[in-house]
Length: 98
Image (cartoon, rainbow, N blue to C red; front, side, top):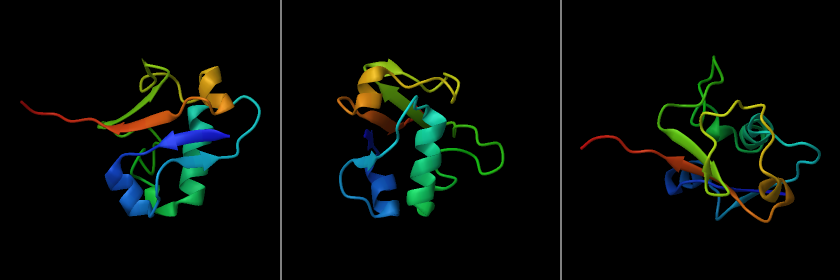
C-alpha cells in the first residue's frame, strides 16, 4: 500500500480527504504512482505532469524519506519505506518569488 500526501488545492480539486492510498505491488516507481493517481482521480490529469510530455510540472516537487525525488527518473524505484507504506510520498507545490 503506497500512501500519497497531496497539497490541499489538489485534494480539493480531486475531492480527496486526507492521504491517498494506492494498492501497488512489486517494484513501485514514481511513474506507477502518478499513473494510478491520474487513473483513480482524473481531475488530477495535467496537474502533476504535462499532458503531452508526461514530465513533472515545474512547480511540483516529490519528497520521500527526507529526500527530494523531483529530479530522479520517474522509473527509479521508490524508497523501501514508501513502497511498504510506512512513509508517505509527499507531493508539494513549490513556491517562487521573493
